[in-house]
Each structure stands twice: as C-alpha cells, then as structure tokens.
Image 1: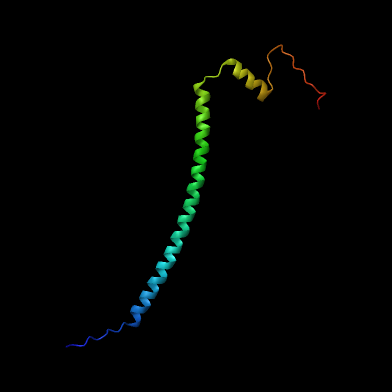
Image 2: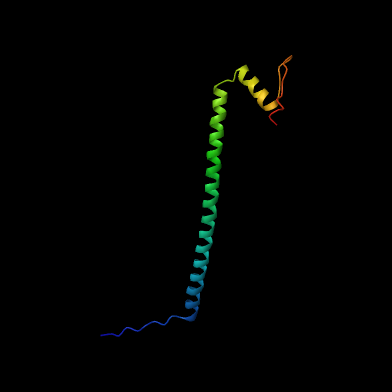
Length: 96
C-alpha cells in the first residue's frame, strides 16, 4: 500500500491565482457598470424613438389628409395672424 504525498503549491502559483482572482473581480465590476450605462442609454433611446414615431404618425396623417385651403387659411389666421385682402380685424380690448 502506497502513501500519497501532498504536493506543495509554490508561492508563485499562489500569487498568480490571487492576481487572476483580483483581475477577474475588477473586470466583472467594470462590465456590470458598462451594462448599466448601456441599459440607461437604451431606455432613453427607446423613449426618444416612441416620441418620434408618434410625430411621424401625426405627419403622415397630415400628409394623407391633404389639407384644403380652408384649413391652411385657419392655420395662417391662428398662428401667423394673417388676414385676407380687404378683411378687417377687430380686437376686443375690454376683456383685458
């Protein structure tokens, strides 16, 4: 019957294993931080995408419903304060 002898692990091997463990831990923490940043960026871009899709749908609706002259005249009056030639505009100052 033979007796097994324990092999002694050298100091260099212990240092290597400790250094590798520290490197692996630092790398994992760094990657977790990068993942968190990318997730936040992804959420922001997703929200921006949804807003842009709503805007695109509104513009497609406007394009699809070719605005007529009455609609354009209404927008010009309300937003740009335009009037038709010969039209008189009265402003009610009593409410101010």
